[in-house]
Length: 167
Image (cartoon, rainbow, N blue to C red; front, side, top):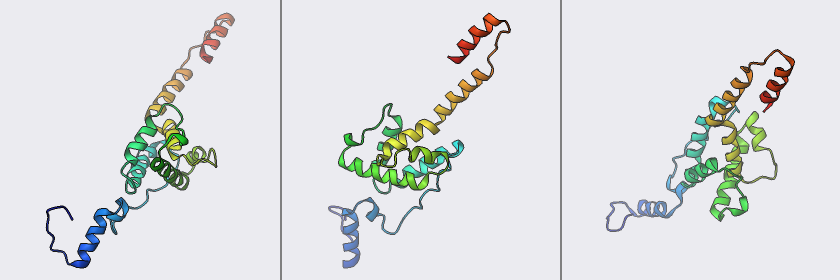
């Protein structure tokens, strides 16, 4: 299997080993398969586990999923499908199909935003924007600030406070 290493495999085992060494990642696993992750129900507390499991599941097909999904979640702007390479386009379609099948509840609205969308990396980025801990912390801080606002009770002060509160 490796150059300079002799093998004690018989003819059929050697042929299977040689095929596995030149096969893609899924074929090299042989009969070892990991189960598909459970669907994501759209609840914030279940996002991180789902994200890790889906990424690792897709890495069975292509190890680059780890890098591509990280780049997607870190992207500040929309990810253009036409700007992707051929392998990335195939992976984006695979990711989109997985997300369509595995996202339920409120997350399904994000995934199904555009029924013609095949760019799973853009959908992944949108899911991260919505469900990442950082986003939730910002929203919680903003909500706390809004709810704890102290309005003055005189007419002039109230109007000024209300305008400031709106911004």
